[in-house]
Image 1 (cartoon, one colour):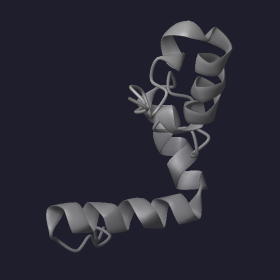
Image 2 (cartoon, helix red, strand yellow):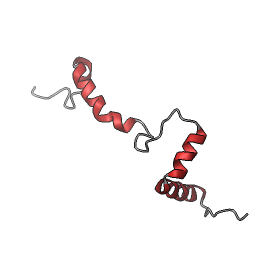
Image 3 (spheres, rainbow, N blue to C red):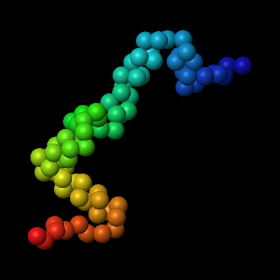
Amino acid sequence: MGHMTDPNYYDKFYTDKMYVLKQYRLAEKYLNIVSGVGLNPTSSIDDLVEQLVLNGPACVKLVKALELHTGSRLVPVEK
């Protein structure tokens, strides 16, 4: 009848292992949620905090995200 039964080529995932590997390589960098930050996912919380404190722009982003999430303004504690 002239119509295609698999216009998106999903069957190719079952038949061509190299195609699957190429598609995985394309998506791999987006699968790890901390891939762009440069943090080791197995590091301890103390290491994570230390890396955030040393990275000024990351600290500013974190504070802004926390302010948005909590709906409050974060200010330094007076000593």
